[in-house]
Image 1: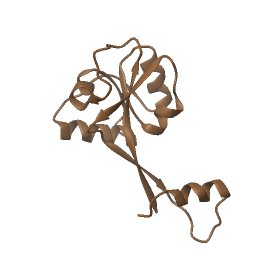
Image 2: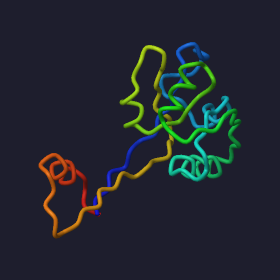
Image 3: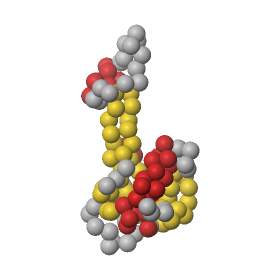
Length: 133
């Protein structure tokens, strides 16, 4: 099994408060109206644990189950969504502003492969890029 840690980011509507610095701090992010992921999703569990360890209760205004819905709601100004780096890169637009979060939680990316099966070229290259764990 190989694992790559993925940093978390904050996705904000561009019409959101401009007072947030280039890098956001956990306490500042969690005080905003949060577009949260359901606790039965990997993102939701990680963010809930992060809130507990930060000793901050998130002011969740809406709960989602996908990065696409979090992005759409953030673009409409419904609040702040904390998304992984890959989701942030996939949904770049002029409507959203992405800021790295200081002391952010991380979400591991895993590649599980069957030892007796050959991987296609792309999958093999990606899997070899991940550090072995």
